Picture 1 (cartoon, helix red, strand yellow):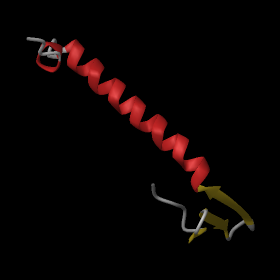
Picture 2 (cartoon, rainbow, N blue to C red):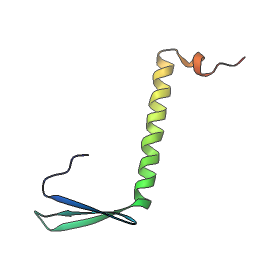
Picture 3 (cartoon, rainbow, N blue to C red):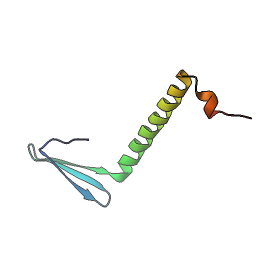
Length: 66
């Protein structure tokens, strides 16, 4: 993710602090908040990959049941 040139960031033990120099706003994104977002991204990637396999009829290779 590319940030604006006005945004400064620093890492803390429990997250990242972002500071906007242009309008003097700051905010903290905690690691606890980032974890569910990462899980949702991974779930959507897995779902999209399985949908791609199904659309190409490659699911027999995955579900090789003998």
